[in-house]
Length: 458
Image (cartoon, rainbow, N blue to C red; front, side):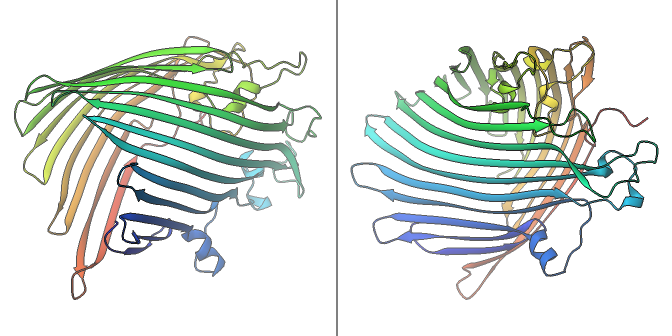
């Protein structure tokens, strides 16, 4: 908001949040600052709340400053910082019944992001957007277990023994630029390039088994850098008042192992009238894994066993229908199918590990790209936009998420919740003499299937 100042304070079960925005001088410049602090942290410190089990503290701040000029376009400076900590409460000795009860896990994360962006209208339908950014991410993890007596129902042990120690530092420098041209009211084209250089310092040691001392060698150890180049061409062609066709190509190049991916994408939208819209779309997508995956070491040969992993890929198919009852109420139905391939899976026979099920902060095995996966389902939504201070949404999903391991068998992935139902809504009141203040009350209810885990609890 470059006209007037606005401030907000929000209190919720997740955190305390403050936001401020407004003009900078009279040139049209503006600022926005937001800060959040974990409510559970504050409540625990003042003795208001006692939560057992997994614990989390977080705080973060983000900002953006916007500076428009008369001839040189608009410049923006943005940034974000966060400091998080996660740990689990120690289970009383008499209550320890499983390996998980013997564990104490602590993870500490720090992240800083800063950047500068520029956008300018060049005339005759040309727009140019450029951004340069830098990020720093530090992640330290310590996994400890009490000494375990396997003949005494896990109830022995008073001293924590290190099981895994991880230290990660990641830095990323990114530059992206995109040029868009509006050739006519019917055709728009956009071409862009993004390059990211990743700098990483990774260290990880893990015991061979519980109660065993930490080894001298590292599970993975790397202090290096690599890059990811992405280039794309996207076009939008409005044939007539009923049909719009979007099509383009995305190309990626991963310099660590010289892997390339060519990804066509297309979508067709048919809008026979104001009330109804039909759409179908297809796209090939790829992604790289977290850096530690590529630098798992083989102890005997001292080589990186996963460095040649290709990008994971997926064919995406989507069909959607939107019906507008009026300006405030609409219904949306979406059906989708995703066929995943080149997924990293365990090489060793009998090991059904797949990278899409990753939950630990480390990978400790050799992988290849022989894995497959499939996700499919349908989403239904009924949404009422804000009117008279009221808004609401009812959403339901039915879906499956599966993968194929090296034994050729299809398994449910850990994200296969099968169903999800969400109801949310809220009411706003305008207060004050000039009705410049807003008081809002909002609620959300979610019911969904649980996360799967292995081995099954028979």
